[in-house]
Each structure stands twice: as structure tokens, then as C-alpha cells.
Image (cartoon, rainbow, N blue to C red; front, side):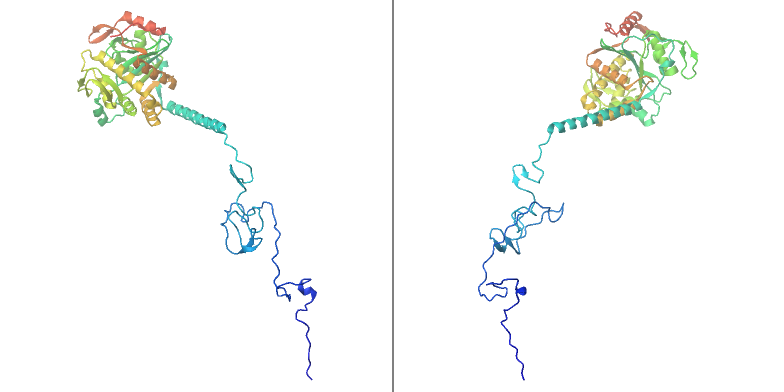
Length: 439
């Protein structure tokens, strides 16, 4: 017997398997041969969301391939990410970069960008610049102050005259050859004489009624009085009549100050000394000094060889210019005039903006000058600056330059005119305008 089984229609699926009322559906087991019409998917709008890749990840390029929902077609088609950051599922900016673009640029959610506060920026820039300038000035001051050689003690000078109005500087150029090599001595024509002497001596009075520069010839006939020995600390002298520069050779700066004060009655407030090599170094550091030479001259002793006219002198030439005396009939007096002229021109050159405002000139000049100077223990940088500005003023015609008044000579030494010297000293002590003119 053959068993037979009768099967019902193949599309008689249970309700639970068909997803509900199947009706006339297409593609889901329906017997209907016609496809169902396209449905419109409801659009969903979402609020702003964080970028899908996390903070700090750059936006991804637009995706143009694959299937996605196209808002313009209301159906399936070529979609994906469009160029405006649309992700295919809503009309908002879900994964795109930034918000709407306005005149201020893209809105990043923080509102329009604030305009820069220029007044505030200018204020803080000015404060920064002033702070840097003040710090630099203070640093430069302490650096320069530490380089001064304060090794002259004027407290060892005895029987001093009373001080007057204004400030009196004794400026000395010595022929010290200390620490100079044989090559340097030959180059600067200094010779090799032992010890040291004063090649130039000047009194600079700085006051309210004009500055006065007075040269003291080295061959001046003076009395060397009693003094306190700088080394022994004992009273010595008097040593009688001698040349002025002998006082320095005998016991250095303190005896020179003591001798000048004794013979003039003028109180010396500060002492400044510079040697051969130091003088040349300052001139080279400032880039040379321009000076107008009235009449050309030569001197084999100093190495001078100058023609008349305006010219710039380097350190070697400058030293020869201020040391030369054998080329002149009135040897010592003409030399002191040349020294005044050059030192005033040097001070003018140092005080120009091209030096003061140029750190590549200013610091080498300060370094060379301060290393070369020997000053008294009470000398400050302000005193030194005042001295240089006064020298500049004398060169510019704001003061008086002169030699100590001379009445004649004896034994080859120059004799001061005592009456004129007394008048000159009284005017300086009272800070009055100088009425005398020297030789």
C-alpha cells in the first residue's frame, strides 16, 4: 500500500511567521505579482551632536559612494555625506564642521568673535618695554660701578682747604707703562723709563655758572709741602721748590693733590687718572675721534706726524697728539692746549647718540674707559658722568678752557701769576663766572 500525503497551498503560512496581516504585499511571500509602492521615510531632525571622531580629529572628506537616503529624492539613491556635512539621515549638522556662516565667519557655538582690545595691548606693551629698559639700566649701572678702580684715598691728604660751591675734579694723564709689553711700548712710542710721571694735569670745575677747564703745566714751579706718606703713614717734608710733576713721582696721587691744594688754596673734590694704553683703548673703542688741527707738526719722540685740517685720529695717533711737546716753541703750554682740545672732543664723541644708543659701541667704550681709570674712593658713576658732560660742554662753547696764568719762568720752570691765580681761585670757590683768561 502506498501512503499518500496531501499538502495544502505553500503560501498558507501561519500568521506568526508572516509578520502580521500580509495582504497584497510584494517580496514577503505575497501572491501579489505587483510590487508595492515606494514609501516615504519620515525625516528625523536631531540637535547638535559631538563630532563622531572625537575632539581634535579633523573632519573627514565627503563620502559620495554607496547607498544612502537622499533628502532631495525622498527615497533611496546615491547619498552618503554631502559637501555641507549632511549625513544622509537628517537635515541638521550632525557630523559636519561648524554652524552657519555669517559675516564674522563660521559660528563655533561660542557666539561672534570679540574685537581685539588695542588699548589694553598697547598698555601692556608699553609696560613691558619700560620694565626691560629699567632692568637694563639698573644692570648696566651696577656692572659699570663694579669696574671702577677706586684706589686713591684722598682722606690721607692733610691740611686741606675748605670746600666751596661746585665740584672740582683733578684729571691726570700718567705715563705709566705698567703691564705694557715691549711691542706696545714701541707702537705707542712711550719709551721704557721706570716709574711713572704725570704728562698732563687739569682742574675741571663744574658749577651753575659755567664749567671751567684749567691746565696745569707739568713744569710749573711750585712748593712741595709736608705730607702724609701714602705707604709709611708718617709725616714727611717739606721738600721745597720743584716741578709740579715731581710731586706725583715722589709719592703718587695724594701728594700731587696735597701740592696743588697748598699752592692754589682750591679744594679738590675728586681725582681721575688714566694711563697711556688706557687712553688709546678708549679712543679706539669709540671708533676714533675727529679733531681739527690748526697747524701740522712732527715729533720723533711721540711719533706724531700730522697735517693741518680736520681728521679722525685712532688711539695711537691720539696719544701722540696729546703727548707731543718737542715740536713747539712754547712746549708745555702748547701741549696743554692740545690736551684740552682733544679731551673735550673725546667727551663730545662719547656723549653722542651714535655711541650712547648703540650697545655695540657703548659697552666696549665703557669697558675700556672704566678699566683704564683710577679714581678716588668717593667717586660715583654720577660724578664721572657729570665730569664727561662738563668736558663736552666746554668743547661746545658752554664753558671756559685756559692755562693757569703764568707770569714768567725760572730755571726752566714756569712761574704762576699769584695775583691772577688768587682771583681765579676765588671765582671758582664761589662758583662765579670766570673772568680771567690764561696763557
